[in-house]
Length: 334
Figure 1: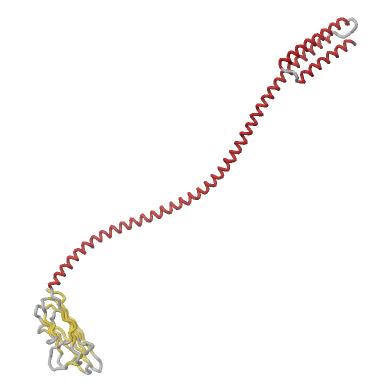
Figure 2: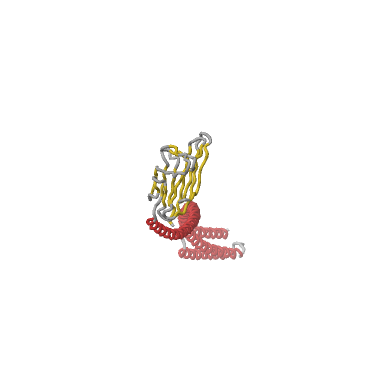
């Protein structure tokens, strides 16, 4: 009975020691010192129990194996205490590592928040740049289209400029030819002017009369065109009706005769010196009017004469309307 009480006391001491180790009030060297003291106390108590057991062994019937079990329990308790101390050290190290990890995690979270903010800012910047890039792309596309259009226009303009330059070069060549020809023409004109300055100017035009009818006569008479309109060079004589060539040359003559007598002949000759050159006449068979015209180009020597005569038995008519006219002029001298 007494042995059982001692065993219970021993178990209570072990339980109190474990409780003290779990309470965490002592750590490190103090825990080891206190553990050593407790171990000595336990050993002392066990020795006391052993001594008591030796004293009362004669009075009890407890098996000797209980001491081996108690020793084993003691070793197990010591081993558990050592493991407990090691576990507490590991726990403290893990707690320190966990605190450091938590601090690093907090710092990482702070950095991550900063990075997220910067990333959000970067994303906004990227979106803005993308929008600006789209606008710039559209602008660049429009600019490229404008550049292509300007290139096409420039090609057309270059073609037109080349054509214009070729045309200008051709015009310059033609202008040079024209200038040469003009210079030659100017020289010819100057020569002609000099020639014309020395060449006589001859031209005349005259009407027959304002008295009305002239003729008929039985013989030819020279028609005296007395109404002088032009007489440059004074080669025509209204008194005689004769044109006298002042120079050797080619002359142009033209005349018109008009008749108003019914049932009568109307006509006239043109003479070069004594030679009849042409006869123009007509017959007025009723009370109508008739006329005749003719023209010649004659080569005359200086002093040659040209005049007109009335056709025998015919008559002509003239009045203020100048119906009967004789004209001539020098084409060029020979």
